[in-house]
Length: 463
Image (cartoon, rainbow, N blue to C red; front, side, top):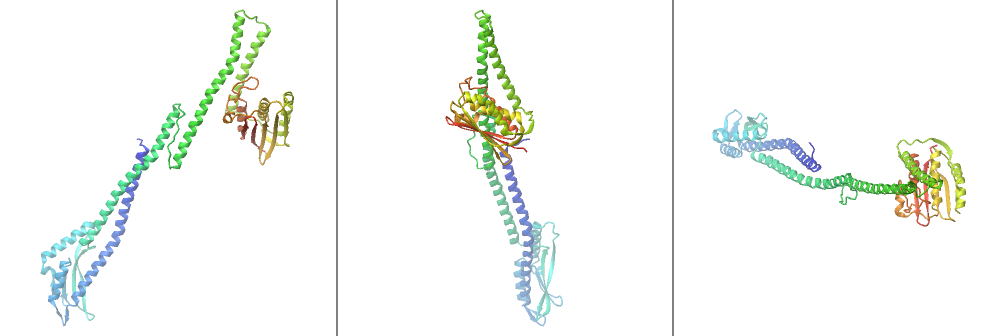
């Protein structure tokens, strides 16, 4: 059976409160009982000594007693719940409470038994008469026997104190339980509402609605992290969905033009409007080549983004590789009136030479495409401890700020016109990013419109 977080939190608060109250009551009673018994015994012994002292003062010497005063003391003790018997040294009874008022003595004894059994039902209590010596001039002249119910005698006041304390503890327990329910409900609500909101948002994401955002604030750090994570997830999925739709539109656009050209040419030749001469067939062939290249690029992207990408790493000089690539591009740069410069010394790295060559070629090719005549492209290699930094910078048209976060996305191009002269399939930078990350490296882009673009590749040397 499953229970909601609110119920579990409320029950946990209630259980903690109940267990705490029960433990306090048990420990308090145990501790108090031990000290209280000692206190009761000391207090009872003190009362007994006071009675004995009073009786001893009534001895007149030569075996004589002030019987009237002894009786007064005995009656006063009886009214206080003490049953006493006074004897002289020979055992002769001077005064006996049971003889004075036996009915009252029996009621006192029964009341003693009731009080003791109510607090200590298994104490094995018995009524006994404890003898105390009566001394006169440091000489034993008699005895005072005081009746007591043991092992622990409790008066009405003692029982009232214990019962009142227990009632207070019970009251505190009831109040604590109610307070724990209230506080538990409040805390459970504070914790469960944001979580319920997160669940609702996650369900919306699962249904494909990515625009929902959690705006409720929480003072709990973990819940804030959870809501922030869900919001970031929704934002990322929303962007990915937009990119997916854009990718579909881009693929359709890229394929539509050559297919439409092929269709129109074929229809014209089938209807006899055009003769299927070499020029017509060559035009159709070029469109087929264009479609085939696009499909090949998409297959290449799928290959590089798969988990099975294999790197054939060797130790090579990155500077020498870049110089060779620049040498291959020099005629194109010269024809377009663009200068290219390289800076760096020999830097060896343990990586896949062919794939890194593809990354550099892609970046240099992009710089060539988007740099105007008279512009400048600079490439540098620099070592930073165990890392290698490669920069490709141009002063071309730049990338709009709103497009920067997406330049590495598949089929994304900041050039919305899709000009054939400048726009490829839009997967070159995606492949470059995949290759760099496969080497445990990182690639970043910095750009401003009409000022230029800089790509920074950071790679571990691995040597």
